[in-house]
Length: 457
Ligand code: F0G
Image (tube, rainbow, N blue to C red):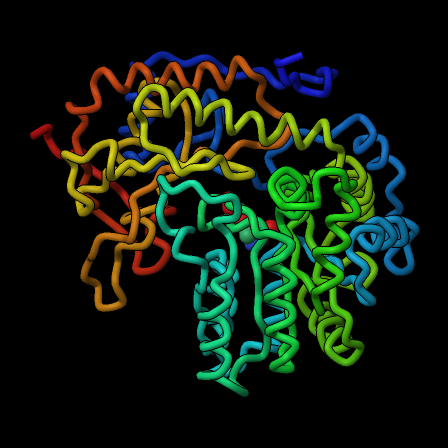
C-alpha cells in the first residue's frame, strides 16, 4: 500500500475550539501580535513545539497508574533506568525534570570560565547553560547544513576538519565535544553513524569527553537506517545502541523521543563525574531515584522508550513531514530540504522577499498563518536572534518559521489543512506587511515582546 497511515487509533480525544478569522484578529491584537502570548484554546493547530505536547499511548497511561511515589528506591526508577540502559548503555543514569536541567547540572561542572565547547549546533538552552558559567559555545556543523535548499542526507553532521582545528587551537580549554541528534537548530537534520563515530574518535584522540544531546535519537536512527550504507536491514534499537556506545555521556529531554509530557536525564560513564552530578542533583532537582519527577513520570518515560523505536511509528512520523514539505514545495513555498525529523521549516525571508529582515518576514508569516488558518508556528530568525548585546539590531543568518509537529497528535487531514492554509497565503503573500517591535525586554525578547504591524508597502 502506498498510503502511510497513522499506526494507531484514537481512544481519547481533545476537542479543538473552532475560531473565525475575525475572532483571531481580535486575539492577535490583544496579544500584541506575539503568538507566545496567545492562549492555546484560541489556536486550531498548535505547532509551536514538539516538546512535551505529544499524545501518550494507552500503555503509557496504564504505566502512570503503576507509578510508585516512594522517595527513595522506587521501582518506577528501576523500570526507567532499565529502559534507558536497554538503548543507551551508560553506567550512571540520573533523572531530571527536563532536558535543560540535565544540561544545567552537566555544565555547572564542565563549563568553567573560559572553557570552549563545540557542537554541530547547540540548542538555545544548551548554549545558555554553557555561557552561564562563563564558557563559550561554538557551532561546527558542515557547510551543507547551512543552505536551506541544498539536499544532503546528513545535514546535521559535524565538520570534522573544523573540529580537529578547533581542538588543536583550544587544547586544554575544551572539556567535552557535543553532538545534537537530530540537529534541531539546524532544521531537525540528522547526523550519520559514521559522523558520530568520527567525532567520538577525534574527541578521544584528544582525551576529551564526547557527550550526545539525544533529544531526538529515534528520529535520527530512522534517518540512519534509511540513508546510510549498510544500515537498512538493522533494527532501530541496534542503531541507537551503536550511536550511544561511542559516547561518554548524554543529555536528554524525554519530552521529545521519550514520548512523555515531562522529564529528562543526564547519563555518564565516569563515576567521579556522576557523583558530582548527583550531588548537584540533590540540591536542585531531587533525590537520585526521582530527580525532579514523579514516579509515574518515570514509568511513562520507560514505556515511551519502548514505543518510540517502533518502525511503523517512525515511518509515519517522518512521512508526515515529507508529505507537508512535498506539497509546500509544489506550491512554490521555499522550505528547508530534505524533511527533518520533527518539524517543517519555511524560508520566510525568501518567500516574503518584499519584507526586509529588520521588518521581520518570519513574524509576518507566523502571524499570517494564525490569522488565515489558526495555526501557531514559531519565528526562528531576526526577532529571536537579531538583538545585539549593545542594543542594536542586525538580520539573523536566516528568517525561518518552524512548524514543529507534536508526536501522535494530529492526523493527515490536519496536514492537508496546513497545506491549504499556505495555498491561501500564496494568493496574497505579496500584500503581507512586516512588523516593528514596540516593547521588548533585554533578554529572550521573542517570548514577550510586543509588535505593531507596518502598513503594506
Ligand atoms: N536540546 C535540544 C536539541 C532541544 O530541542 C531542547 C528543547 C532541549 C535540549 C531542552 O530540552 O525543553 O526538555 O528542557 N527543545 C524544545 C523545542 C523546547 O521547542 O525545540 P527541554
